[in-house]
Image (cartoon, helix red, strand yellow):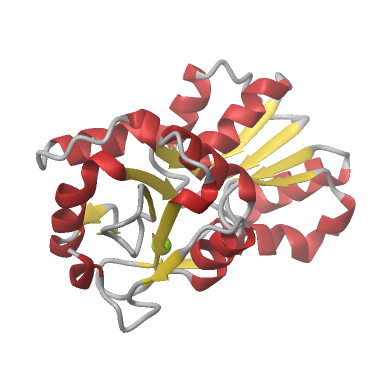
Length: 237
Ligand SMILES: [Mg+2]
């Protein structure tokens, strides 16, 4: 399947990288198929250019245009809306929001962008849910509850923070956009970056619920790799 695929949509965290550092099998796979790969990740802590530079340092050329990240696309949607916005995320992503021209506010936001905010706290939760109760629109980078850390530890993800919001306000009554996999939007963008139709691509990822289910809905063949499967990325090089 890998050899014959016209293009490969490749997950990042847990698939080719742990803790945003590519592992040996990931590097070998990326080197071999770089010209056919689009990175398709629910990451909400990195810019596409971060991954482009990290790979370039390993001698692997995948341009930012072929790196589709949920946090980046959540911010692009907020930028298109052009409303007063509060970003729940790290300072690096808030800098990206500034670069995209997003008007960031500390009071009365009309939009909340929820990324993997490692400074999330009781006071931030209180601020967020009260803004949502007043009618703010919510843009969420991804629905993932956790991802695997570098030593097999559990890293709470953006979906876990969304669950905290959902404990306080009814999410089904909000204007809510969830950007990342398994939703179709980013799959289409990654296929577009490779100039392919969905059925011409192959998705490879470690998460059955986001990578594999999202691909299946669009008719994209998909391979589940470890830790979600006995198949390792190293077996595909
Ligand atoms: Mg993954």
